[in-house]
Figure 1 (tube, rainbow over the protein chains, first blue to last red):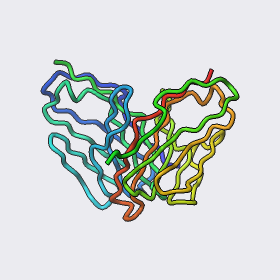
Figure 2 (cartoon, chains in turn cyan, red):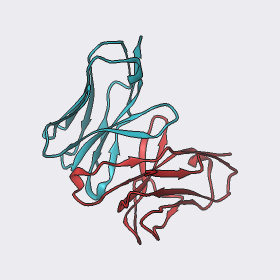
Figure 3 (cartoon, rainbow over the protein chains, first blue to last red):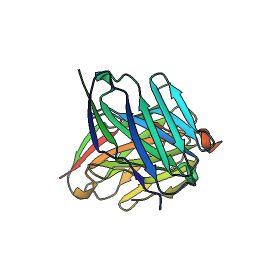
Figure 4 (cartoon, rainbow over the protein chains, first blue to last red):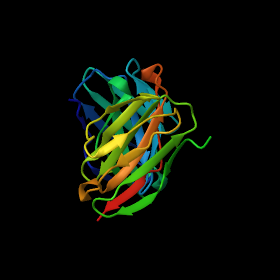
Length: 111
Length: 115
């Protein structure tokens, strides 16, 4: 059974800091890995999707990497801003497009 | 494009009542799914569908029924609500071709309380 782990559960950083969010998974037989953002009381917004054959994807200040063989992904946020405060969820996609989620990392960026 | 639309946004039920959570997408996606999100548990898959007329169980299907009569709609039915079903429910959809490229789009969620 696939298990996805995100540690730590919460993170607080000062504005402007570069930061890395980690995600690990137990079964390397995945089709892709997605990073989502969730604001309090809201739905999930897809940030980046990395296909299993890819190593990284970039969107603006965000860069996500994937090492399928070691079961790890990282989300790098450059020059963090208070508006980046949210919960970041990692999810791996397996057979039949089923997603297995980590429990998320709640990020707080202090002005 | 409205994306994935869920109704209602909030609902309070009494134990034993039934209700249907609605989910509709206007992106012609083949794949649709329902998740529940609970504190400390993350999101867990309830049921999913790979196309009209085809549904299957996810990780936590007990107490829930689904059907998929059209490509656009994927309702989730609670036949006899229990307090353990108090949760936030999310519907998601994606294309089911070329799985590796599939971005999954989520609705805004339905907050359900069962008293």
